[in-house]
Image (cartoon, rainbow, N blue to C red; front, side):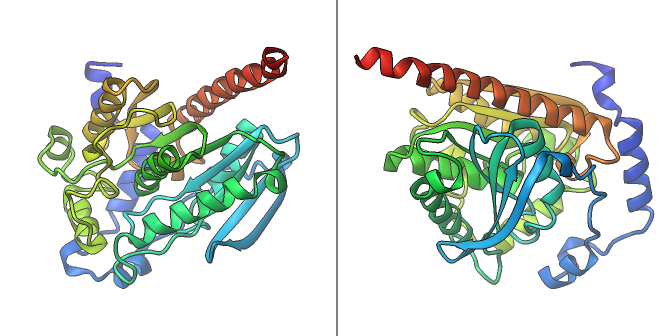
Length: 320
């Protein structure tokens, strides 16, 4: 959707923004990561979707904390999900509502990853954790779901960044992924893109916040593991769904990543949501637009699974 409608936040989201910004906050440059973490308020939880969840268990995979969500209905596949938070904040708990919502809409086994955070664990610690857990999931897919279960990666913001890197790792190591579900991914550290200037002061992710996050992450901006837009080629990675938001400083780099995928002959669907902010997956209870955007992403994922399952059903007959 284009035009004036894109210039307005949805009313429910605007009310949330007004409420939180009225409380005030010190400038990012004046805060340590520990101080910023102490200011974070748990996002309004979404409806629990408990009727769709058979079991939730916390464990460890490859020395990384994970939380496994299992659907009540037969599992259709497995997703590794990585939470957002600028590589500095965020947690399995903070992304619990989004994880449950995805499972409820897709019947996937979802493995949420508690990767190490910067600056205590600078780049590439989070990348290493994501790759290690994906390798573990690949090796244990029969126990998690069923033998040969389709594998997917997903995430939001910094977590979507880590998911893109995991998809490239999967391609390079022979792990067959069937989908990437990427909500408002960070794919570069170019703070001069138009969306950074258009939304430089926009809660919850003003331009100074992203500069602060990248400074604490400690990544080399030339390293594709930090900036997947700089990967030599994306050819051969899994098809992707990239969701961006009209009022998000990261919108332009998400769209740029979609164009890179297209130029490297990777199937990609772009969802450009009007009236929404960065981080809308943590606003599911208060934002109808966020719920609708999540629904669209999960519908695309289900459609991809339909194709994978149809091809799998045909496989035995083609081998006879």
